[in-house]
Image (cartoon, rainbow, N blue to C red; front, side, top):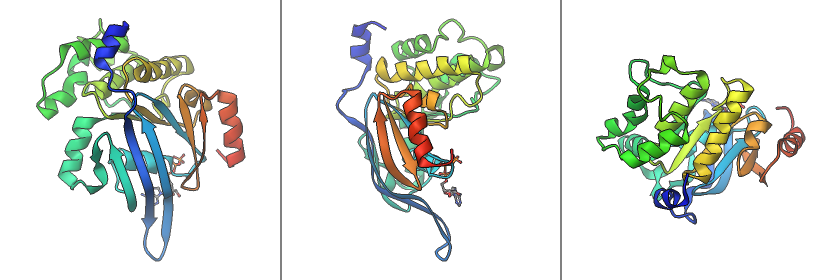
Length: 255
Ligand SMILES: Nc1ncnc2c1ncn2[C@@H]1O[C@H](COP(=O)(O)OP(=O)(O)OP(=O)(O)O)[C@@H](O)[C@H]1O
């Protein structure tokens, strides 16, 4: 993408996209509490790509679900962009998720009867917002689907379907895109293309990406990896490589 387009499309680089302060999540009952998050503090800059790793049961999904407003923490504050979501009432939180966040899951969740273009722009339709043609073009070009927008999902490969899901997650210029094992259903070559795309999404489009993964190679595409163990943040690696991530994971225990 040309620099002038990037300057026009990218948000200010210094802002924080996501902030967690003392976030605690306890499942179970008061007599049998199951602590999933135990006082997590973190700050994620706008335009960065962050991976979250940790042993099974360390709280990765809980962290993602709380940070994305899909679940409520037991205590603590979560601020996305300029909005503290922890104080929002239920309907306001649902609306906030729809208007300000993007989601990419292992399964692509595209609607089979809609074209790729209709799938990508569906969040705008649901929000009653117009399609910004320049952003639609930038996003469909970035995901490599500019020539395939008239197709239906079943006419795309798995990797192309996931790229359409990423475009759909980006169409409302979200405060953050949350990805849960986005390459889990893809072969390794296609998975690498999707990870490369997520990296460019942050680097070129200025979007903020937070990804939970079990895979050190996937995590190595991020600018920074955060490590969780036992519901707490226990470290991070900047500009990580897969071997360094795997070594750190081995020290954290079974994974
Ligand atoms: N709905 C729930 N009810 C009760 N306990 C839960 C619930 N969801 C998660 N937990 C518990 O909270 C802890 C953290 O779970 P979480 O799913 O966040 O871990 P994870 O790191 O994503 O694990 P995995 O890598 O295996 O997916 C675990 O002890 C889990 O058993």
